[in-house]
Image 1: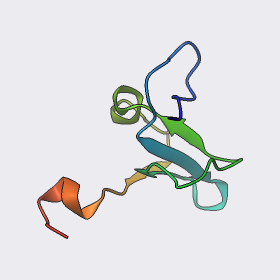
Image 2 (image 1 turned 180 degrees about the horizontal axis):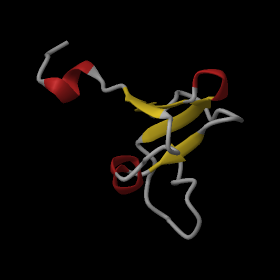
Image 3 (image 1 turned 30 degrees about the vertical axis):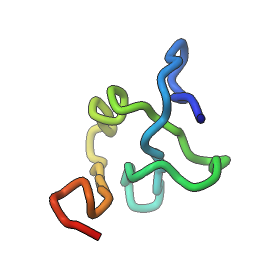
Image 4 (image 1 turned 180 degrees about the vertical axis):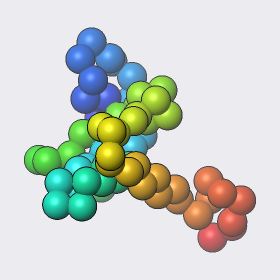
Length: 71
């Protein structure tokens, strides 16, 4: 089990947050298969509350099963 990257949070990570500085974009997606050196693993609570700096956009990717599709 990987833990949330947020300080003092011991919850299990469910999503990975990465930044694309060139495009002013924060990308939040399902938990990466392996720990990424430039990514942040987040629990469900922190992933839901994630926002980006003013002028940036947040792109949220979800697994197909999370939006009602069956694999």
